Image (tube, rainbow, N blue to C red):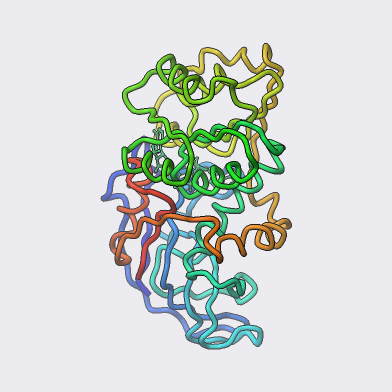
Length: 330
Ligand code: NDP
């Protein structure tokens, strides 16, 4: 098996050299274990938190051990009666080509007719996050005006489409021109945060939605949050899903200087961790799965080729190099 590991907990933006590709002979399968040949690996922003050496809501990665992450692959050997050779499965043994895990940590792919890598993106953890944040945390209602940051990413690209289908004005913040174009081609008003300070971003958002927003789906933090606070309506709700602008930060965070808006506008701002909501996953699949399968909901992917490129795919998330879900194909 070939796998990636790290030997240090990085400060600031991780360097490519941090990631070491190693090879190890796998032991024979123990009773209850399965061996899986991975075909798709997920890289996700939360993995940066696991590289900081500190336990948050999840343990840090163990130095020198294989990194972990969501992956999709095929069972090639099994000593678990519930899993047969040839089964297509999802599990957390990513960042490697061959995974060996207890069968009870491995999940057969659901039966909806979509390409299997969709279970790492729009119908996987990121999609479930978008649906939960919008509906369960922000309590989005029909006709609400919704603002989403990192709007063309894995989470954001589903959040904007689910919001749009419920009627109100939906505005997405993203960086690169092709991401703005992707949003606009899906009927979403797109605003770039690049080369704009919080004041200029506020003006651009006000122009896009003069009535103001009822919901802000927060993925980024920093100037996006500052501008969102200015453009939310009284009684607005913020689902705090992520704050990627800070994940590689070395010093303490500046602003938002206008956090008092939470008080003045009686805003409700709630953070959430998707794992607490996983019992709702079947409900999410039932509601969103058929809409992905029939094309009503679209999703984008950015694919890097080969296990060797996994760290590059991960690091590119912080450069905004992905539209939609960032994946590695083996
Ligand atoms: P994305 O596919 O959205 O990829 C990350 C994107 O973030 C980039 O493409 C880039 O888009 C944007 N970005 C990166 N750095 C910055 C920056 N400094 N300033 C502004 N934008 C930046 O990732 P995901 O959809 O997987 O995750 C989106 C967010 O959701 C993250 O914050 C993540 O941590 C969070 N999350 C939270 C979960 C939870 O349980 N609460 C579960 C899953 C995800 P652009 O070009 O637009 O800048």
